[in-house]
Amino acid sequence: MTTDAPARPEPVSQPESDRYWEGARNEELWLQRDKATGEYQFYPRAFSVSTPGGELEWVKASGNATLHTFGIVHVPPHPGFMGEIPYITAIVELEEGPKMAANIVGVEPEPENLEIGMALKVVFTKISDDYTLPNFTPA
Amino acid sequence: MPNLNRLKALSGQSAIVGVAESDQIGNVPDKSPLAHHAEAAINALDDAGLSLSDVDGLMTAGWSTLDVGEYLGIHPRFTDSTSVGGSSFVIHIAHAIAAIQAGYCEVALITHGQAGRNDRAGVPANLGTPQNQYERPYGIIGPPVSYAMAARRYMHQYGEDRTREAMANIAVSTRKWANMNEKAYFYDRPATFDDYHESRWIVWPFHLLDCCLVTDAGAAIVVTTAERAKDCAKGGVAILGAAEGHDHSMISQMPDLTRAFGRNTGQQALDMAGVSHSDLDLMMIYDSFTYTVLVSLENLGFCGPGEGPDLVANQRTAPGGDFPVNTSGGGLSYTHPGMYGIFTVLEAVRQLRGETGDRQLDDCNLAVAHGTGGYLSSTGTVILASP
Image (cartoon, each protein chain N blue to C red):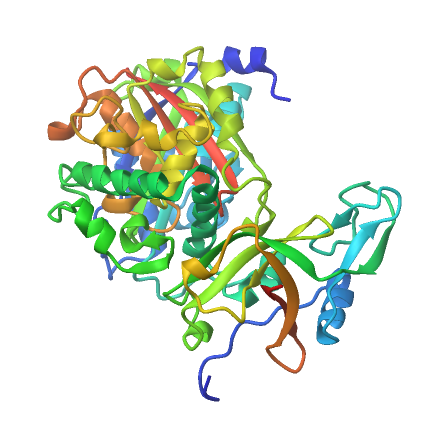
């Protein structure tokens, strides 16, 4: 993208997600896990969905995932993505259990290059000084 | 869990007595969203033979009822700004009958207005929401991206070719209905299967003709007691069943991309009404995308998971077919200003009253109107009966 192109939208970290975005800046994917049940949750909350009122801990994820579904965006839904089209959006299923949204990178954006269930691994895309996004690429 | 016995006691106790669009719908550059609300409100009250001074309950979505109430100059005693996407206005009907039967109000006005094409202000984003942290930065913004990913998952589970054929069937049959509705954006524009397959990609697997319109429009509904409905200009369309609920907000957190909340609201609304699927003469199903109709019909229980493509095959849903769906032309071809759910009810009421001219169904006595909101997030379902 050229410097005068409209910027991609950035997240605005909330107190319960500061740890997540700090991890991403260091090119690590961090998840919350319920201490009692061992269940992971995405996205970060100040609340355990598995055990309401229960305690959470932060754990570094393996970075392994499978492709749950995807789409290929041809018409940018925001001017910040004008220079990115066509791009692949996806929902991935993390090895730890939860699902999250991401872009699939390192693949030509054609349907035949993507198979639901394919193995993926996390990679990181820096979008600004403050934010780096976890993304996925074929393992 | 909902108390079915108490819900059954509400069945048929309230009625829709007025429905209307705003004065012009489609491409309306000289009207604000609130102007659409106000025009539709006055038109729907006229349809009922009532006036603004009769209204003591106000409901809207997208806007606060404070803004709409002030604009209309009314002082409601019951207020509900439940805003959970395009299904909201169908959900308001459930709230209206509860409020009316509990005694909070007697004449509930539900209004909608959006300048989807020509809004000068746009909609501010709350950048602190989970969606704006975990989806928006990836370019997962707005309905087409999210619904396309749900449709791709459906294709994986139930077959890509038959899903594609089903989506094409829905696009073409809905356009045929629009060609019979002079208020429809595509009234004069037929569409063939070739047009469908050749239309450009918006978000693969969605072609342009998988996607709803973006228009300017308003609509309103007036609800009152079955008793008062007898004195209204056109009588009342009885509200036999109504149900609502939601699962998630972001598409990435949807528990199952092929099972939306209609899996619960369909059966609940039918049970409350005391009728079954085969009793229904008209299916008004929110069609933000072709896929939304396919998955909603399954979720509502018209067929089993993965059987939707057989249900909509061979233009059964088109004019002359034995399973009429979206006879107004739907969000795909009639109008879709952003939150379309209220328009499913307008057409259902008009078909039940026998007012729809060339596209009027024979013996239309019972209809379902089903709204979906957000990213397959929320649903509202109502069962309506002819006067």
